[in-house]
Image (cartoon, rainbow, N blue to C red; front, side, top):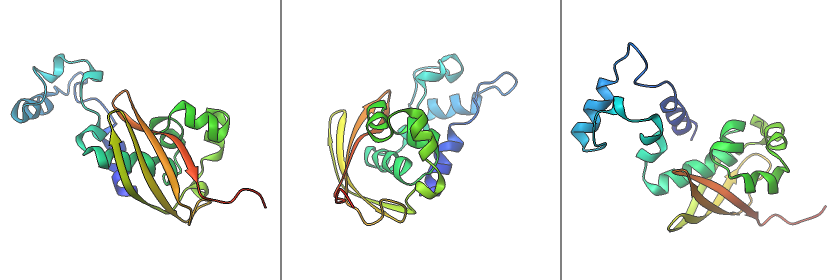
Length: 162
C-alpha cells in the first residue's frame, strides 16, 4: 500500500514541461500510445492524465480508500481522496481532519472488497487492520470528482457507545 501511494505521489511532482526540460519524452510517449491529440507541451497541465488515471477504475477506488484509511497523510486523507462532505461529516472541518490525521490514526493495512461501480458513483467494503478502525467492516461510498475517485461516506459496523 505505501509503495502504491509513493508511486502516485512521485508522479504528482514536477512538470515535464518546465523551461529548460523540454517535455519531449512525455510528448513522444503520448504520440506513441495514441494518448493526447497533439504535442504535450502545448496542452495545459489540467488536460494531462493524473497518475491515478493510469490505473484501472478498481485500482483507483482501492487507492482512494487506502489513502483515506491507511495513509496517515492529511493531504491525501483530508482532500485528495476525500470529498468535503466526508471531511465535514467525519471531522467537522478540514482543519479537524488535518489535526486528527496522524500516522497513529491510520490502519496498517486495508483490504478492499465488493467494489461496485455505477457511473460516477461506487461502493465498496473496506476491512482495515490496525489503527482505530481495525477489525471493523466499513461500507464506503465514493464519487468521482474532477477525474479522481474520492471517499464520500464511511459507515462502520462498530457499536455505538461505551
